[in-house]
View 1 (tube, rainbow, N blue to C red):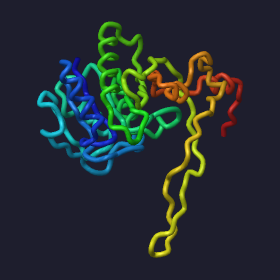
View 2 (tube, rainbow, N blue to C red; view 1 turned 180 degrees about the vertical axis):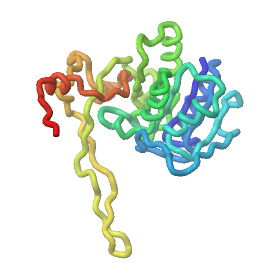
View 3 (cartoon, rainbow, N blue to C red; view 1 turned 90 degrees about the vertical axis):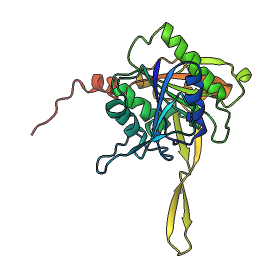
View 4 (tube, rainbow, N blue to C red; view 1 turned 90 degrees about the horizontal axis):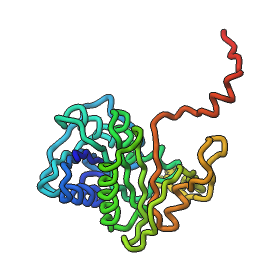
Length: 265
């Protein structure tokens, strides 16, 4: 397969190096276009008011991997690759392997998921991959599963255009309990901002907080209740695979508002 790989952790991140090298050594045609530095939690931001630059990178990766470092956001990187750097479209856009989980409502802020979503917007099936640890550097199990997943998709393509958001537990391969199809859960935080004072006596705030994982999505979303949430299965060492789309229309809301008579003027 021809693969485009990006991330939000930057060109020097171990996760993208592991993923790109592993898939290139497995025989895939791999191109990397990713930020030149960490751009985590940038969401789906695009650079509109300044030029975007991309430079070829000849270190970090297997010689078979073609790589660029871009000074834009993760979404910039994928858009630039698809419209300017690649001669032909890839079969898949992959993003990751991210350092840290992208579960539940975190995906709305995630640069990792947004990079993959940019591929989806351009009509290319995409996969976002995250290791559920901020500290572990063992990305090999996640890379191994990426190859297995791509092999499976080569034999049985996705039935519709979609993004697969994949979260891999930070354990050894032998400790992974299996793979589970999931729905998006909810992740909320408490004590979100840490208030501090700088040496000049000025108050500032540092975004932090403790995650609350046991929050169920609203019933009104019409999601199948027999399908577990992503935030739950990863705690039991299962790989979570959640299909996503970019259309945020609230179908139940349309139904409930269909009888409204809007006043105008």
